[in-house]
Image (cartoon, rainbow, N blue to C red; front, side, top):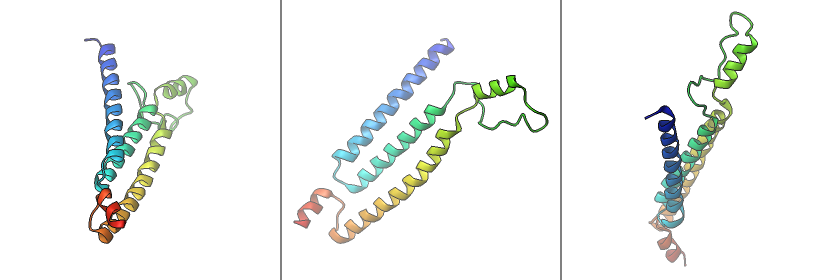
Length: 135
């Protein structure tokens, strides 16, 4: 098999896996009445969104980290800067994903706290049962 065929297969496989993961997580968020399962599905959904953001900034190999170290000893030439710019990974999606991870963790902790309060008040985390108990 050629490198192009392998790259195409892997790209398609990753795309199908991401679409499948999004579908399963959305199903878990919408269809499952258990709050713990909804939290797990929401976490999977946000992690999948983070993977999509990282894939947007990815470049085909050979890729290098977004840190240019060539200017430490001498001024870089224009050709070195162009080569670096064409092979460096985009750092903006990485920074956004780090921020999204921190915000997602805080949101998950808030949702888990609310779920614990629902369990303390009603004795269950099944939303159908909570709706019946609430009246």
